[in-house]
Image 1 (cartoon, rainbow, N blue to C red):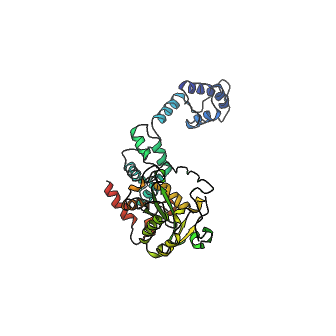
Image 2 (cartoon, helix red, strand yellow):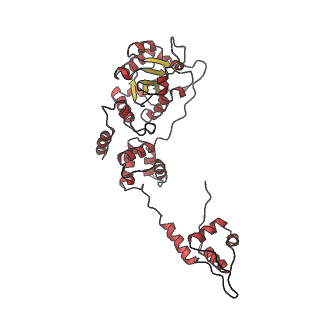
Image 3 (cartoon, rainbow, N blue to C red):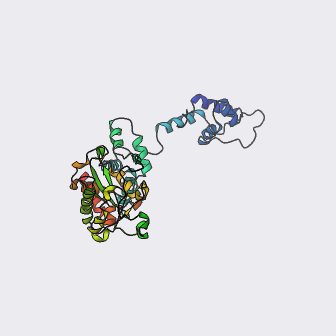
Length: 356
């Protein structure tokens, strides 16, 4: 925290003027009133004081160079009660209403800033940097409104619990192909069709949802799972992947969980080549790990995920797929994955009209 700063009082300003008229140097004046020299220099500069250019003659009083304590104090008081620039992001303005709408829709401040810049490219009054947005929200007075608004933010990723080494749910998967044997085009993310997969677990690991994220466009697909067995995983992922055209389901990178023991049949049915990451190396599937963090907004930890229908999971995935991403230049995953079927501007206009 910074140090508290006390404004100069009218008595201190009167002492400054008096000592200037006596010919005392500003540094000595600052020391006499127990203020820093920089404080005094700013006070004199902003109130028009200048050093005498010629020495005063015999019998003449020193001139304060334009500094007058009463005028300086009135100016300081006026600047205190009136901001130099009126805040752009404040309640009751069109910009504030737009920001509140997007927050309720689950957008992050960076996504809101990027969306407003795309939707209103020629109107700076309806744009706002995400840093300004954060500052304005957290500067709101304490109360129910502030609590509600802050509650719409995603507070960051929860810390992942380290998996126990030495077995802990892992087992040798037959005929698995290492991530290090993937072709270069998968690593370089040049064309869509290469996916990362994982499970999101519910309370006590008794329910789960399969997640698939396309590496190039960040397009997300959710799959309802009856349980976490290899057979259920095969059924759930096969159903999800078969809904995607063949040229966009080329490979899948997964961890070495036992639920993927039937990966060879996954390659045969949807035609997806499966690669396995190294044990305890979630960064090798970082896109999927990040997406799972975003999905926790809709599929919270400690809940029962078995109650979600496939239609509800599709709706959740659609919210992520139609939300602009900073890493995509604030384009949407759906806009890149299905460019012929999705128009972001039309979607945004319809969504905004519906919300208002």
